Length: 179
Image (cartoon, rainbow, N blue to C red; front, side, top):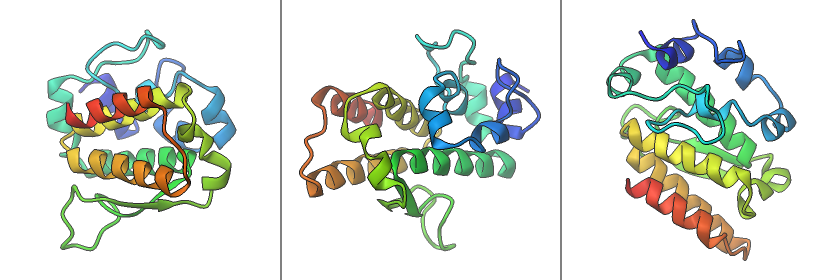
């Protein structure tokens, strides 16, 4: 297969020897201060400026990705963990849905870590790029509506909290969803 498919299938490791399971078992502080995992968890077609060891997502990877229940389950776990890092909870959507709900529709809510973690996206910082990466990855996998729903939730939540999202970050996020 490929490096990223092996990683998501649970039989491969990242360049540091970590499995996806190991990465997803880490706490919020670890996620905040380690900057080389996100490119493995949400790979893109273009090389990372921050992690030269990260694999590139190929067209073949994209074709294979959603064809394996293991990969889809691991994707669900990765997205859920990253949303938890952001203080967001997926309440209904691609992986947490009644059988008649479309695969690509997602609903979100403020999660139990929201008050502690809202800074990860209310402020412009390195996490803004991580969010861009997640949105691009979801679009590459064909989960465009998921990405659009997440962005819409983030904008509405910021409005409800009377927070003006950074225009640069918002511009990246909107471009990622429209890609």
